[in-house]
Length: 227
Ligand SMILES: *Cc1c(COP(=O)(O)O)cnc(C)c1O
Image (cartoon, protein in one colour):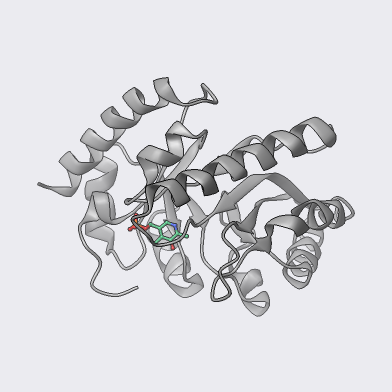
C-alpha cells in the first residue's frame, strides 16, 4: 500500500465511522507527519491530506518553510523557550498543559497583536510520564486560561494510554467527551468546538465515543522507526 492510497482509504473509512459517532459531528483528520520527509508529506497531500501534526519545534519549522500553504498543528510537548519559533505559524497548539506555557504563548501573541488558538491537553489516565493537565484540574486551568486574552481555547486534546485494553480506552474517551460537554454547558464564553483524540491504534473507538479530530500517523505513512 502506498501513502496516497492509505490516505484515501482512511478518509473514506472516517466518513463511515463518523455516522456512528455519539456526537454526530464531522471528524477532522490530522496527518501526523513527524519523522516523515517532504516527499512523503507531498504524497499524503496527493491522497487528500490537508492538515499535519508535528511534535518537534525544529522539524515543524523546517517543514512549514517548505509547505507554507499547509496547516500545521503542534501536537507534542512544547518547551516555553521555543514558543517564539512557532506561535504565529501553526493552526493550533494542541499541547497546552501548564500556566508557564500559557503565559509565554499569550505574551508572544500579544506582541504580534494576534490570537493563538490552543487545545488543553488532558492527561486522561493519570500517567505520570505523560504531559497534560490532570482530569480534576482541567476546569481550574481553563478558568486561568480565560484571563489570558490573546490565547483562545478551542477544545480538548488527549493521548490515550498505549494499551490493547479496549474497555479502558473506551472509558478514557467517554470521560473526555463528558468533560467537554460539562465545560460547554458551564462556560458559555468558551468555544469547546474541538475534541482531539484517537491515533492509529484507537481512532475507531475514539470516533465512536465522540472525537471530532483524530491524529493519525503510522496508519498513513507506515511504521515509524523512532519516536
Ligand atoms: C505520534 C503521535 C500521534 C500519531 O501516532 P500514530 O500511532 O502514528 O498514529 C498522535 N498524537 C500525538 C500527540 C503523537 O505524538
